[in-house]
Length: 233
Image (cartoon, rainbow, N blue to C red; front, side, top):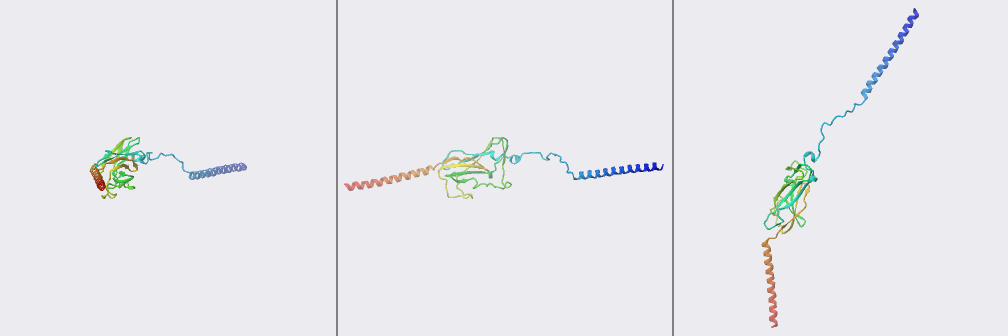
């Protein structure tokens, strides 16, 4: 009887030790799992961009690309008599394949007149200057240009010589060949030739002076010849 009790107690002790051992192992594994969860990086989740993709640069503002903006110069006549005031024109073309905006503000336009390779007049001399680097201060005039379309603007040149401070000078625009060049921002046209004709009154005076000079030379020659003839006689 006594031996049976001792055997029972021994078995219970073994079972209790086994249960305790399993409990300790499970507890260690649980603690290790928690540590692994805390040290592991958060999973990367692909999320959509909060802003939808869109155009950038000029396209974002609706402006025409600068390399598709072209300008051309023209005059209303090929030759102007004394007192006639030439009408100078700038034609702006959107060479883009889509409708877009072009700033044709007066401060971005320039009409240049050249003679013998020199600039003798500019619309900037007495007009608004291009406020480079000051987009906020410059007065803009944004116009919608349909694809491959053009718009035209003109001004009359009074043929009054002025310097770059808009002060009238004593210079004059002599008769001869001139060229018109127009600009819009960085876009520049090819030169267009035109002629300022000479004043007919000045031509008449010059002819008269030439005739008077010829008559004087002829009279002098005849006089000398007459004196020679008289001397021979």
